[in-house]
Image (cartoon, rainbow, N blue to C red):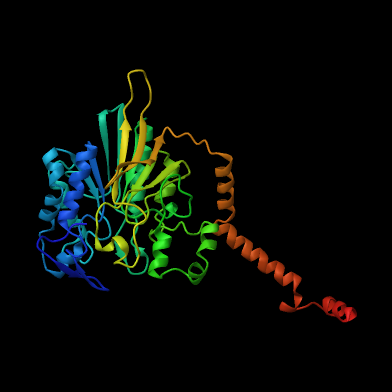
Length: 392
């Protein structure tokens, strides 16, 4: 996250942030971006939100956010690397500008979204129509006092389905990748294929988990209920639309700084990025504890079709701040070979058994059995009263 140029502190609801002391600000973000560009040499960079922190702009009554953003992406401009962006929940948080004004970002050099009138849009990239990838960009919503976040706009979900239908009728074969900031609810409660889900431990460190999670975190982890994500309480239906249209290979989001995992549900990979800069929200304003991994960025590699007729190949991995490529983070997204060992199959069965819906079912059945086995907790029939008297 980048802030106003020349600003040293700003207030949050709980404290005053000292940018220099917390190693937070434009210099850090600029240095990290330049480092990753030099190591990876990407053809395209996609920022999945929370690039600007709107709070210091609002507090200090500054409106130079677009110039600040441009300075941040200068390494991309200098290297003539194309890029695009989806907004997060902090980009306009407490800002003196409206969210729709952030669309001006697309006017900056080398943006592939120039001219877009909404953050919800789709673009194809690749050497030609027969060997391209379709990118789907979504606005996942702003902060909301009741539902945490406003979630994906229902109209954008409907438009996605309508466009998908048109592309199917036109026999487009381009595979799709979707990008947004806040994870879909479907990211939650799945065992990762790769990576870490550390949000539960951070929430315990902050002290905002239910009592049972404080007392017996091992039990919560045993039944798989620690795989939490910071999604909106509102379900937009976007994942169901994607599963129905079958044109998305993987989705990518940010937001949860303690998560960098890759999951898979209904044939779609659900991927986190890796938090890439030191910002005040990175550790819940200091209350979430240390990150479970180094800073980094998620890289997606797309191998185009070969002359021998071989198909496209999608892979992803984490590029770490200190150690470069994290080898154990590499995974092939497409074509995907689901060859799970017996232990993994058993783990999947156990995880299914301990899903929230199944646990609720067991609770209801248990209560009914308890009432039947212990009739003193319900009204007895005449026959049962007579029988009870005879037993005496």
